[in-house]
Amino acid sequence: MFQISPDMDDETLLAHACESLATASVMASDVAAFVDTPQRHRILGIQQVIMLAELAVNRVLDNVEVSRYPA
Image 1 (cartoon, one colour):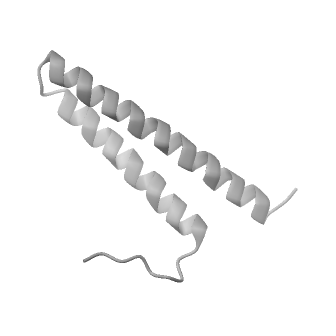
Image 2: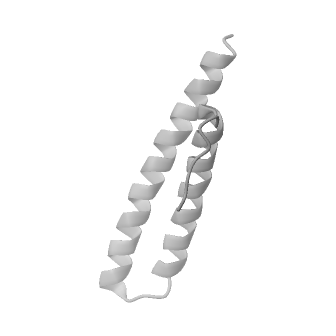
């Protein structure tokens, strides 16, 4: 059903992954505001995992940019 173009470069894929993770983090935060405490804690835990993944993708994206344009 879904397919990633085979000629898509790594930087574009990483940027899209980062944006998707940021969006998922915001959505989880929004949902957490409308649920009771036990579920809120679970959702906020999921949000933290998403944020950690976003940080990792951002670091890889930074590394890709640095290796592409060395100082």
